[in-house]
Image 1 (cartoon, rainbow, N blue to C red):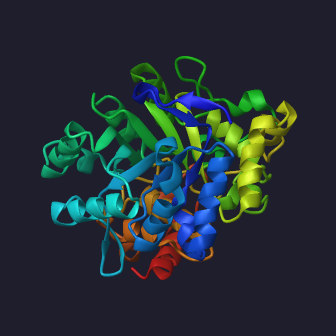
Image 2: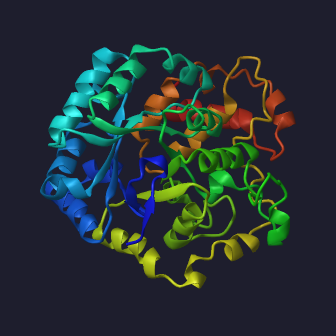
Image 3: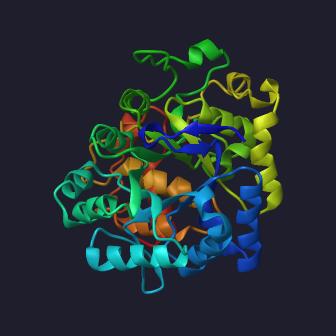
Length: 381
């Protein structure tokens, strides 16, 4: 297993990591064995955003025999309330949840203390003068968390974090469906948006994030590298063609500043598939040739979260609503985290008045009003 330096943390993390959110799907012993198997394959970084006791207990048992060989991303602000996930900055919840994390992981330190899920620029600004951040800093001073990181899906917020001076690494969603512009049969035409340097074919805000992380020595670990499996199915892929896990891994690992991609696993075979990246031939890694043969306009009718739909008379964040809808429908059951994040939006799809002004501005002809109806039905609000 190849390792990469995770930015200014100087931690040497495995290129292939472990995203732990699927652990609770299986019997405890089965999931514990999965973690141990991953370690035997050289995987040494694991993300635990999950607040549920079962997942945390499984991880603690899985790493207890070689804790020092693991780098753990532990999140502050992901808490457990009334038997379900609750995202908050309230220290009445944050502190007990973090203490529970340490206890269940059977450790007295967390390698990467993650400021959990900041996607709104306003929330980022509020955090800067908060008791929550003071608590994070206190944990860092006491060496209970060794490094401070943050998780986000919004490149504008992530750029602010990368420039903050105290964030050392970022957990960010990276895959071709989230990153790339509409595909072309000619790969050169695919890269129509240019940004200073060699970055092409990437949304400008994301390109700025990658560039900023490189300049500030901020390492990136990747979540949602497979877009919930959507990229493996040509009928669900926004490109109209399927990619393999190895191609998706290669895409993520070829982004600037990326150190590791954290994959979710249900089986040892899935771990083997991900780890096979390390010995795969270059032809097996080649995602570019696949995308070059995709339909000319694969995004027609599909939201790319570009924001051209603004402004909304009700102030609905249409792009974010669509993103949560897409993330929810990528899986058979809506993840509790996605449901919770959607509910925390200031305005919801049910408030849409159907004026369709957004549709007139959408470059990809998305039927937004129809999607608002479907979203309201899906989330119940």
